[in-house]
Image (tube, rainbow, N blue to C red; front, side, top):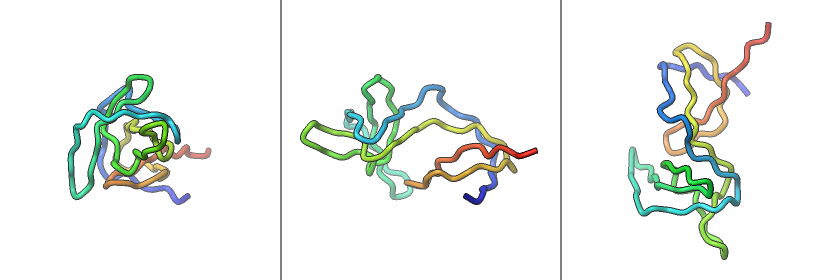
Length: 103
């Protein structure tokens, strides 16, 4: 994976954001938002954590609503110029992880 370079410093806004494994149950509150043409839904995980999730994360099954893939809304605190590894892009956002520099 080719490292990406952070353009602007970002400080994480939330300490305990929603996470869901593929197949994990989710519930929706009915709140939704559309930004830059992307639809976001306010979801609650089984452990009570809640946050905005992309609409394509939620799928319906015989058991109810569930996560269609692994998802984490955890934000990365990073500095401009720092290298990060891209995990997934969706809804105008990029999920990244820090790239450790080798000595």
